[in-house]
Length: 112
Image (cartoon, rainbow, N blue to C red; front, side):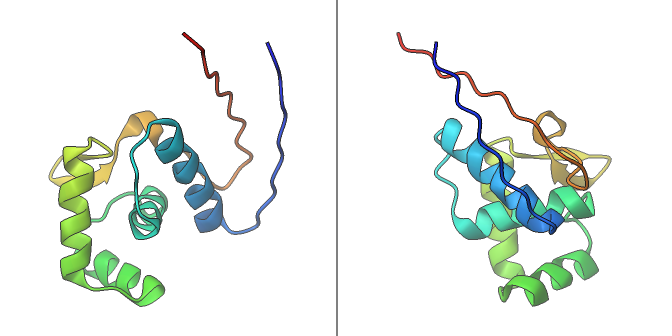
């Protein structure tokens, strides 16, 4: 078995979350777009994407529209990346981390 250690520091919790969800997308062959990864990261940090003011904040930060958000939410819900919890759309708890602390990932890729 080969062990490779990688280390990347970032002071921006949104960027750290984007890096994490980029890895999750790659390892699971989800083929998520950059904007979808940004939405997942933003939602994980804000804890949901259900309210108009949160959607507007995302639109301002990333230069997109409410319609685009709604389309992405539908896709991400179908993929089970987003889930409904008490009427709120949130990141699936299985992949929702706290991004204001160090994260250590262990990824095992098996052949055969």
